[in-house]
Length: 271
Image 1 (cartoon, rainbow, N blue to C red):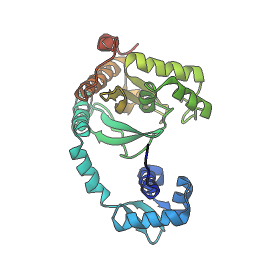
Image 2 (cartoon, rainbow, N blue to C red):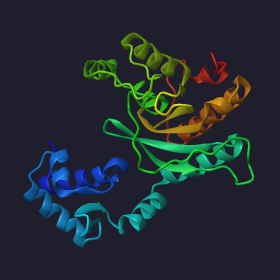
Image 3 (cartoon, helix red, strand yellow):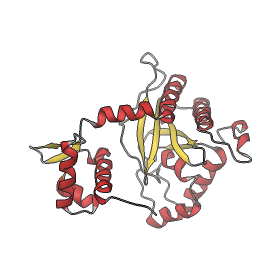
């Protein structure tokens, strides 16, 4: 039996909401509306969080934002989480190898969220830099980040998203149901995903899933770049680097590939 404490659950949901870039500064009325809770209940929870420095209230704007205590708390959590710490080292390695901004993505409900990033050395000028905002969410159904999570879900989950409709973020976003499903199946076969301009025009993302011991996708590692700066040779090198890193992290997590997956490393990555 699952037990839940409503006030704790509401506090957690409020913190998650304020962690989103779009809602980083939000009024009580909007928080209550977004969380489908009464303003009175939200106010009590938010004032408790404010006393403990988990949220901050601006008297002038009358809006709430994340509080200062979450900074050392987050840093401490990162230090104590071995899987995250090792993945943070890996994205630095990939950033140096590829010359590209490299990020870790985690799935929060139906939103892939940036949780860490690494930049190549300042004297590496192979590519233009793309700024990444930690905590920013991206669409689950548009682009390589979400595709790496969805591809390993049960196909009934794919149909759920199709029933809700595929929202176009740019003209390049895949909205055709058949193409959407085939793209997810291709990610399963190849072990990586590439998207061009599906979330932001003119940008490319190259992603690979990091599996946990049970085979669930725990994180995604991604290189992001300007599409016009790529050619097939460069793209192949980026795919190789991302996939190799994801394999190392999955193995460290205790993941054992299923039958047939052991040969993925030998398959030409761009096909």
